[in-house]
Amino acid sequence: MKQEEGHTVFHHALKIVPELCIGCTHCMKACPTQAIRVRNGLAEIFEERCVDCGECYKACPVSAIIVEQDDFEDIFKYTTRVALVPSVLIGQFPSQITTEEIFGSLKKLGFTHIFEIDSVVEKVQEGYHRFREAFEGSKPLISTFCPAIVRLIQVRFPSMVENLIRVKPPSDIAALHFKEELVGKGYAEDEIGMFYVTPCAAKIASIKSPVGEDRSVVNGVINMEFLYNKMLHIILNKEVEAQESETVNLTSKGILWSLTRGESRHQLGRCLAVDGISNVTQFLERLEEEEESNIDFLELRACDESCAGGVLISGNRFLTVERLNGRAKKLPAIVSIDNTGTSRGYNHNAYDLQPIAPRSMMVLDRDRSLALEKMKKIDELLKVLPGIDCAACGSPTCRSLAEDIVQDRAALSWCVFLQELYLRKGKITLDEADRINATIWGKDRDYRSQSK
Amino acid sequence: MLQTYKVTGGDFVNAGKASSSVKGILKQLNVLAGLIKRVVVALYEAEVNVAAHAYSGNILVEIESDQVRIRVTDSGPGIEDIQMAMKEGFSTASKEVREMGFGAGMGLANIKKNSDTFNITSVPGEGTTVEIINKLTD
Image (cartoon, rainbow over all chains, first blue to last red; front, side):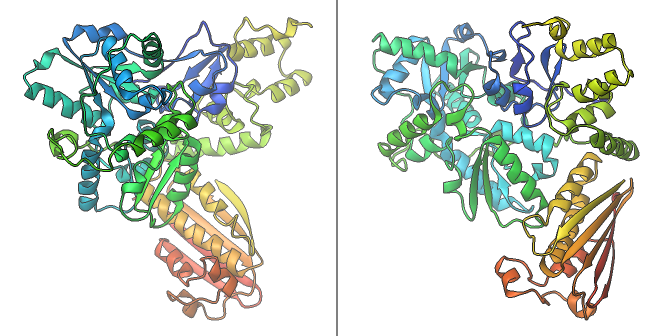
């Protein structure tokens, strides 16, 4: 992809392993922002377009897409080793395993402190309230809980960045709050390592290159899938001495916050929750066309069943939701006594997000008349292309091939149907066709000589 | 660039297809969000008008680098008194149309509000033509 001036490099947590990638088209077709192409027999990601939602990771049949993570041993660089745990981690374990056993296994693995992220949702709630009171733009307010959604809005719905609530998500607020608390108790600040156990790739990316904040307070991210395995092993081998969680403020509201309707059911006015990135895209398309919306609050989550369906969740998402609902019933709705100040108190300076900048990837060219020329050409190309979106050209749809052609990233002869036509008409030779196919599918995939 | 669309009378499900498509184009042309919204709202209202009142309609959208010109021509009953029809709250929409949440009598006024240049001509018994021209630069 041509790099524009002033181009910024975005950190992405999703990487393709060339040795494993078989250059099929599954990930490319699953990508909600058309950020993937197949070139030289391998999937390639356009960095500017990727929102780290993880749909490609879910779609890959050979596990060739990996989620980048920090080395687990990194935690031992610190003497105070904090695990920031979201509720969905607990929700993965069968219900006969107790919370104490779960946290005990984390201590066994080397953490000195365990904090439940979702115990700070009242702070987030207070932040939402304050933001809503001061907000002068047009409705609805959109939650910034899901990092993939924030990025999706930046690249595909740039007009809606204004609607994003500029309050950090619970994971960030929890990290800030608990670090402050530990420092207050006398722990040396530079010896505290905050590690976030994540169910999603977008969260890793957002910690490595944050949107709306300068630097994340989190020192490292731990892939939940990786950790769950280790934890389960310890628990099943009965190596755990039961441990109390450090936090006593988890409420039923908190434990369900990261699930679908977890936020929306607690907001004022007309509130809606949409999960699944294609559902969200469809909904935002519609919202964009409305003159005035009478929706007050929108909870949008990239994954089906929200964080329970996160790409790094090993368990079944519906069972995870069920278990968390079961655990929520045993918790109080509100915290009656709060000694630590965990549940209340919103710190503006630390918890506010900076304005979120749009970074549209839709624009064909910064120069309007050039963009219009390209648009006309795309229209012409679409009349010639077969319109069946087979993806055999290495682009996900006929339209995206047309866009790639006008942006000098592909040629019309890459379309297998047109190539066939060109061959028959003698416009290109068999050798040329082979070269084109090697550009897309790699030179090792010599399908013409294959015989069964 | 020229785009054409068709609207069928009574088809509210597909009214909005043209405005949605034009929105996609304007986004790719790097038009400011506020200006896109004006075009989309005006065109959507015009589409709904055809669906609500006419038998069928043709939409012609001409996009240039500095402006967009939209012409919506329908064959239908036409408008007897345009001045009256332009008034906010005036509506001749049927009960059925109102029950679907349309026909509040804001349509034409809203199109005008969201257009830089707005023209309307109508021949009773034949049909109505609405022309919308919006600048694409501030």
